[in-house]
Image (cartoon, rainbow, N blue to C red):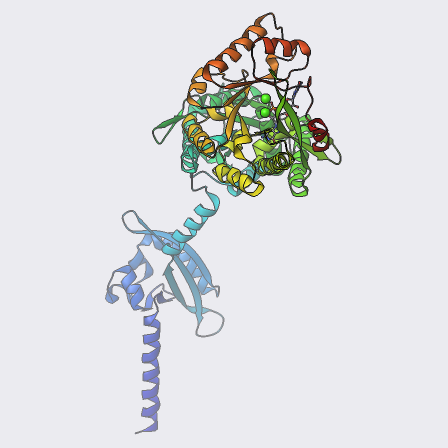
Length: 582
Ligand code: C2E
Ligand code: CA
Ligand code: CA
């Protein structure tokens, strides 16, 4: 073959391969000359445009896309490309109705001579699916899946943005911080899935309120939120914590009205799984710039104010003021110390004896916890049990207490004081701990303390939250052979229905009726009726807080079974209590 022909054949083959390769690409590729005319188009492009090759090849871009799109979008990109620059951009197209496609297009200049580009290679690909998954990831990262509200990062971002705007314009921003009251209890009582539903319903109710434009109306106009999307400024930033920003506002009359309306929203129960659940919220409010200059300080101070609202009895709101911080710091310090105390075993039990009033004999003792802190000294349970309860630390502390008490009880039984009963206090959180029964079983097994002498002291308030479940738990406990005492009777609900429902063995009459009691007056009448009732129900009555002979004589005259109080002995550490036993 003529060598020229051979080269020609080779070139032709190479060209064929090039064409195949370019056509095989899934991206659409076109070559456009300086007259904006299509010179080469790939199969992918033809498919994507749903036109024929003849409709495109040798036609101008304006012919194919329409003059408007050419003028507004494409021409400038091509012109820039012809000056030698690579240009890329993303456009949204609606090829079919209601079906938005995102197309990324890259214009690459193609030089045939000198500096001027003669052609533009235009490569485009559909990134709609990529966009969709990006959006999904964003939603997962920035929005809370339970309530569909913005999560913490997005909220912080928005607050940051609003603070920047406010600082430029010399305006203020109000930050509302809500925390549901006793949500943990609701969660423990009704279960986690009901808890989740409750959070979602709370989110919806708040959203609905904030969506209504009149909700934030104020005299002389409306608050400038995100113009039409107020609910965007609502977020769920933690378990049962919600936040909300209002911009361009410093008038406390307005924020007070909003806080009051929000509290009112919680007056109606939430319908969850065919049940009506009542829950309230506590709200803290802090302002930029008065209460903090940055996101962190504002959020922290709104949180502090919320804690103050809780301290004031919950279901209310408070504005931040600087001296609140001192108390919050103090609280946090104790909480940290408490965690440390669990690790370091800084707790001990003291024991207070209980006496049979008729015979004068000691019949048992109540274990009462003490915390020995290096700095603070001996801390009373009244000062740390509520905090331990709130933070959940009580579960671990309580488990330690029941084990130590049973171990000590067993030692005394083994020393010959076999008939001593042992009272151990249980808090609400412990009582509804799903592992309570197992933990008590394990304490009895490992210490070998006879459960017939173990008496768990529970307050009526603890059992109020979910009577049905309380009865089941109590039955299970009693099935193990131990006894139940109703502690602090007379201060809470003192409901006779509860006495009927809960098969308690002992009723502990609260100290308020006995300490400094007016025995000849109303106090005396109340005590004697409670004792009578116990006799009729065949429940043992224990009088707490017996401090003097006069009280004891009164109790004896009214046939009260047992007594406990400073008149006999305060709670004592183990060594001193052993002195009493001798
Ligand atoms: P409580 O169960 O009602 O315990 C009786 C409290 O009254 C004890 O206070 C005791 O020291 C005090 N007391 C006893 N006799 C008298 C008296 O004659 N006069 C006066 N004024 N007070 C008397 P304490 O030890 O400070 O305990 C306070 C509360 O802390 C307890 O009240 C109980 O609710 C809780 N607590 C104590 N130990 C534990 C524990 O191990 N676990 C749990 N969950 N709570 C505990
Ligand atoms: Ca008690
Ligand atoms: Ca008590």
